[in-house]
Length: 291
Length: 291
Image (tube, rainbow over all chains, first blue to last red; front, side, top):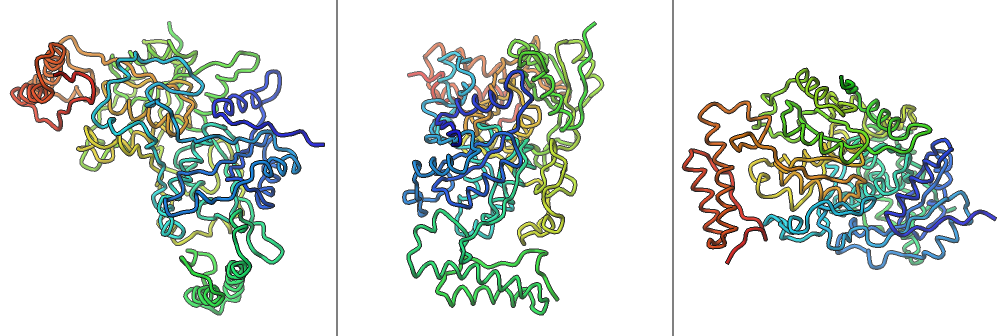
């Protein structure tokens, strides 16, 4: 029977756990891999965890439905969740050392940031000084720092999800600073997200190696996703048309007889014919470009 | 004779040095304080360094004129510098373990971020895959990730320096990720900057304690600044009027007989009379507010 992963809910405890395990006295420094998830785990997530174990001595899985990446019109309230089931799956897959399930990561209580929370407890600013605030600060002490990856966040999924990528970049930075991993694993199903995280890590000099992990599909070819559970019978066929269209596009590209525009039209046609609604279909800059 | 601080120019070497010294084998973990500067050091900087030593076992001073915080109309090209003089002063003040003087921190060579640089060297993505780029990525592989502290970056100095605070927040995050300090010291001369860094650290969960250090003034009251060297004889009096005006404002506020507006007018009057040009004069939200 596999050892149960430790379940950690507090961010200060999470960082302390990470530091204790990575720098255990009398032992060589151990590396740590983080697999960030929003829970409702499926085989795709489990493949990320298996990948993590190949890269590091310790594996932490985070489960956090990040409100920062949902706009008001999106499905934050109905995002599927099943923490008990997730913990059971994580025990079964084995090799997970800790599961980080924080409460609201954007709730700083009454802290205005001047006295740093977390590893340090004692206030360093006299109370009357901490209260003096510029007119700008009268706006409140809510979360207001966002990481923008200004080119990669635009276009593709960014067109229809205006706050998605700034929310993802910001929460990933927060998780990196809390968990302090050496490696983090992201699925290439969310390709734009993976590229954007790589760019953020490079641009902000995070000491984290980013691994992009291959898509895991159902037997019929549908990419695994927590949201698939919401597909009704007829919708599943529509969703499948994406994979079908991309496979056709790949064949056409490799065949070399079609232009970019023709391949794009083919994708639109295949998805539309199945009753799918297309947000965007764009060709990559250099891949699959033919004469 | 004080030990000479180590001079480090490469970011990978800087991080390796920090990790080696903080986690020296057989020794207890040592804490590290960072004092970020743009060089041309004066007594104000040296006071930050003395403060740093009270908070940590190791002190690193960074010297980097950050292009990311200057707009094209600002004085990046003429910002004063004297690295040799700075290193001499840092030796004399004592207790500085390393000086980090990097080259261009925004130059990533041909890396597009997909293969992480720094502590990891080996590529993890097959070459042909790394070359595939979305149309979005055709824009190039330049720096594009910026941290925005959306309320605190507006107003006050933000009004006349549009990219200043995003540049400061971003380079400080980079320095934190490279040097990995436990504590960082900022001067309160740049009050808005200090508050903004505190907010960023809170919002992004950086494991760094931020210390705000008191302003150091010349005998006549002028706040020390690297840019003071550019004041001609007549301009020094104009600059001094800022301190004079703020001192008068403080007295008037403590006296309790003036309204906020009257105090603000007093400041504008005193500076204008001395021939100074005012960018802004604003009252704090709660401090010095009288009946």
